[in-house]
Image (cartoon, rainbow, N blue to C red; front, side, top):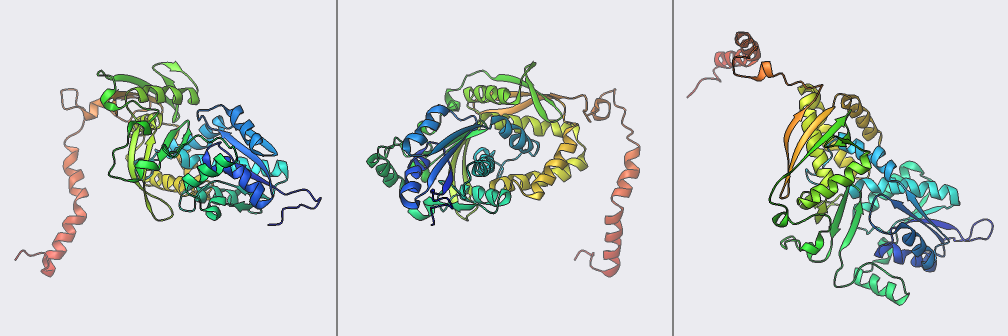
Length: 412
């Protein structure tokens, strides 16, 4: 790699930096092995930790510049809300917290590369994970002129060897050989993998969880929460209006206290292998449950029939690194046009790991009690059913008559 630019200065690389094990050692590795000046970019997506300490740690490790970008609002408005409109769950389980964060971080890297005149961007993803695809496909979609460095595909160190590399160079890292979990967190969820979790027969130990109480230890009485939506956007809890970020934080706390949001799943990675993943996503699980139920109340059968298959595709595109694809953008606009009707309130019961809809109401409700009831208030015209059934079944009747004439419909 040619490390000197036109002015004789070293070329720069923008590293997606979290302060975790991989990115902590990569600042030094990019300097020593690639002879590059490192610009560290950390996205604040609602994860715990001292962002200023993370920024300073990159500088102390050798970065020539270090930035923390408060991207929580951007994450919520441009990624989480479209995902909520799509009720996005990869393979029916995973709310895609990490998956959606990666294209946003890639966008912040591209913007930083322009500011700092960098020709390269780098990430700390392994060669058999999903995140490498998400970072690199997003970068190519946003600025195909940038070159991408993926050190973990070259370096091939075990986590134990990384820890030793950091120790030898005095780089503090937040893991030990005895507790080698790989953790990723943002406001939409927390993921945990590696260590004892790699054996799918092992029940996850309690130290794998941080956001949620064990359902066995959750309160013995249910907690009810009323979530108000306006145009598909959650805007209030129990009558108190609040912003989306505040609402997600409150539901993460309430759901976590009741053991809601634990996900233990065998997942199909994009690269073709299966992995065992542990997720915690109380707010995401509660909101998707409530939102999907409210859609059933306010959207027509035809609209729902068209929307549901697209929801699965949105989840797949988010997982597969195709968030910036034209198809995903088009589906988002389709969903936006339907969400204007998704206004109302959903009451959710939180109890020992479960989030169950207990009631719903909407000014746009398509539920008509007079049509649905079987008591004396019934206004449905029962006599209309005979003609409807005759017409509905006419194609099958004609088919059966034709089969009988040909002899294929006779019973032997």
